[in-house]
Amino acid sequence: MRNQFSVGSLPGVSGARRRSRGFTLLEVMVALAVLAISLGALSKGVSNYLNNASYLQDRTLATWVAENRITELQILQVWPKADTSKGTSQMAGREWHWVQKVTPIDGRPEIRQIQIQVLKNPDDKHPLATLIALIGQPQK
Image (cartoon, rainbow, N blue to C red):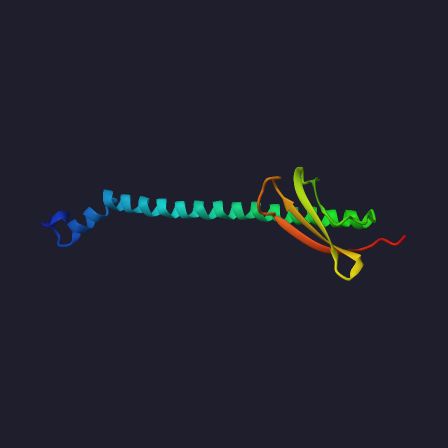
């Protein structure tokens, strides 16, 4: 005996079959919109991370340039004049520009304060690193 009901005539079956055929155009468009927004946010996050990493690398190298300048003055036992001077240093395959400001300490003629500011470009307004050190007059 044959079944008198066709699959399409059973209650609830036709709707289930219709939904199981695939995604509608609207569902695909919503999924693509969610994916595009997610990828955009991820791309911006990666870009921010890379920019911050580059900036921190520059600040670290600039600090090393300033430390090297102070160490150079100590090793050479140079007693710098109270003035402002400029120069360049090589570090990590790049040229760094520094400004050195030497000021005497009131009441302590044997001590000088040295401020080193390191810039990426000579016309930059804001230094990447500033180091202040006190050095004593070298023994004769």
